[in-house]
Length: 315
Image (tube, rainbow, N blue to C red):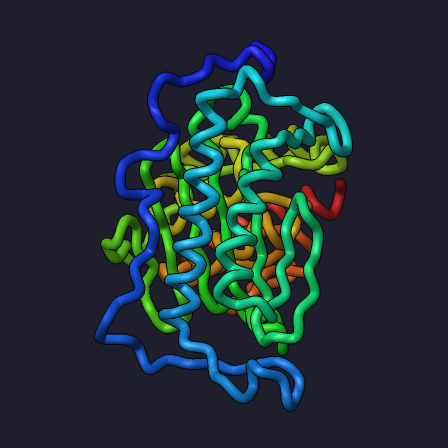
């Protein structure tokens, strides 16, 4: 089936409750704060409340999820374009979803920088950088498959330290979120600490979203499959990272990602007690600049790195 022939669903692609607007809590606000930006900027004079950042990320992601869900019922009308090739698609739904996310962020924090996959970078002088992937897994979205996500992360511009992140999987009705200093939650419930340490019982997600990474797919499968329970290739790095954080998968290996693909999801894994980095080592509190992401419980991370490093080196 081609993307343009995707069956327009008769029900919303956003499950009840997941896309509801955020309401600012009236009490019990966390005292956790951070500041950033060059001396004299508003961000330094006014520290950032992390609960407010997380609430805004949630609100923006929900606005994006509602927009993406509204387009799902009209998928047959979407004009689909190829960006870098037939494996890299974009549609009006992607662009409208990003604009919906940006509108919420800009209304509440107009001085912040925004990185978005589809709309580029809006440079601000605030101490926060917002990192957006409006629809991660566009091909899945266009084909009517459930593995796609809206991803919104906030990072400190002073050092790209991740502060808050939200990944919504609208078709599954799942909202996974975290901020530094608190445990990751899924639909409001704290997740169990990631503790899988038996490689033979690990379900490992793979993602080869760029043409340059595809030649590694065969050798990677050959290296991993005899050692693990099984492999999956869902097609959305953001969704896969949320799955690792919530125990729906045990690890993700995804080379060649962009920050918007992984920033929010990496924070989800880290705040669930997992480890994320590239094959040179973990990157606590941020994302790997190489774009190669290995995320797993601490007990699986090093064994997986040992299996994957020769493949990456040979590739």
